[in-house]
Image (cartoon, rainbow, N blue to C red; front, side):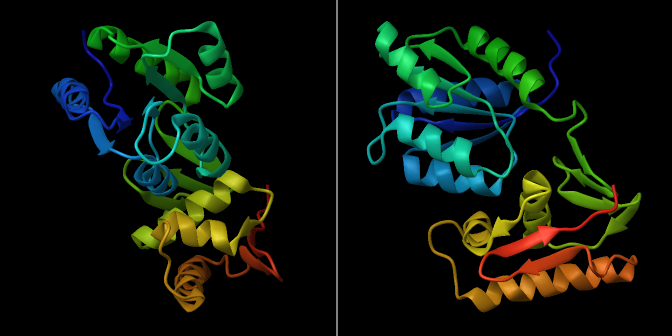
Length: 229
């Protein structure tokens, strides 16, 4: 069966299970990242645009339900979460769905079924099947990590792309400085001047294409996109 390649975050602390899942998905030519603990899972989900997160409930540092809640609340886009767990009681499943899980697969599971569920979730979760996010004149090519303004390429850095992704996902609302810093650097951000430098560079690139005032500063909060839509 031919499948479109997906980007998957596998959150699993059991090394054998993690290896089996990653090797199977790699065999489908999908892009996979692996996190063996909840803290790394949250950090990766803040930085990358995954199609699906495969999330084990029993993690060594943070309960999987808390990880699910954090990803759903703080990730720059609404990524589907498929929970993988040996907890098969109805109450466990009900709690998982209440915390934002999109699907539930009980261990042991068939890897072929896992792939089918990922594809179904990705179809529901992708804002565009071609992996584009469009907000006003901005187009973000999520897989390529490129940005366009009215069809013209923006020469943005990786950090600049992440800032635009967070701001487009939040539009028309503002994004706090702390959220942007976490999206860029995870749990160990540098001083705030580093974020200001990236915002300045991004504004300069927008200015070159005639959109100097697209990013506005919200005092005591962060930044917001202002678009003619």
